[in-house]
Amino acid sequence: MPYQELLKEGKIKTHQASPEEIKDIIEIADRDLSFAKEAMSHNWDWAFTIAYNAALSVSRAYMFKLGYRPSSAESHKTVWHFMLLSLSEEHHDSIHFFNRMRVKRNKNLYDHAGLISETEGRQIIHSTEKYIAAVKKII
Image 1 (cartoon, rainbow, N blue to C red):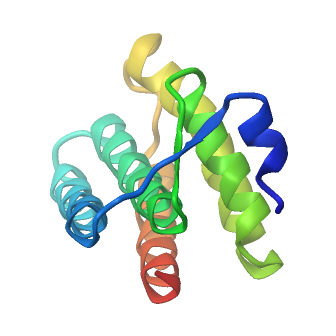
Image 2: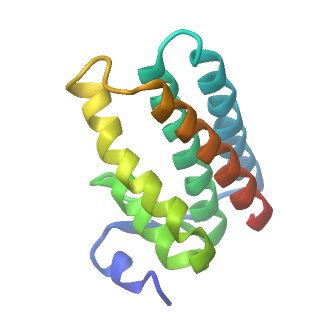
């Protein structure tokens, strides 16, 4: 099992999610993607952050579907690590992209206003749309 190390390190835990719980998290991802698109006309920082959250949410739904959830410590980093272990190589570029955006999101959210350019905002929204569609097909 590719997740054994993450379990042993306490980075993930087993979790028996109901179909409704998984559906709810996917709806959060869809909602956040929609809000990110709306935020584009107001603030690129927030559009970026909301789009990142949408990608993270659909990844968590996938984890739940497989019977796992991240523990609270470094949960975002753990989600992306889990996704690398569980999705085929065709999705790895997207996962690496979102993991890099995780770091930028932290700076954007906590350290610097105006950090995100229009180009970056549009890129993450486009990438999130494609990623959510791909993960939803797998789920």
